[in-house]
Amino acid sequence: MGMMKEFKEFAMRGNVVDMAVGIIIGGAFGKIVSSLVADVIMPPLGMLLGKVDFSELAITLQEASGDAAAVTLGYGQFIQTVVDFVIIAFAIFMVIKAMNTLKKKQEAAPAAPPEPPKQEVLLAEIRDLLKQK
Image (cartoon, rainbow, N blue to C red; front, side):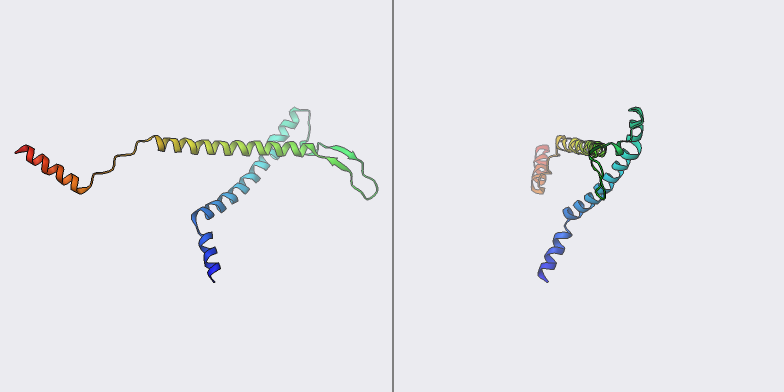
């Protein structure tokens, strides 16, 4: 039972839960970007390049024979994956850049001096009263 309790404490720490949420959102974001590239960016790009469908671009290394399928090198799919990566990397770069900017602003803001202890405040009041007399 001790091991289960330790695991539960580990799993319920804020960092682990935050990481899990980040992974889930990252996976969904990856799917969105893949769809954006495959369905929105690549078709017009293919039309501009002479009605090319990038998902079908491949070099046949060995033709199909009998029951054996053709051996192809699908470089069009690779190009789409590279575009996916560049978009995701740029989005992550922008998020990290924004976080660093906010962090610098927080560090640059001067911290207010801490309040003096009660004793010092009282002593300062007494000093001021004595000066007035």
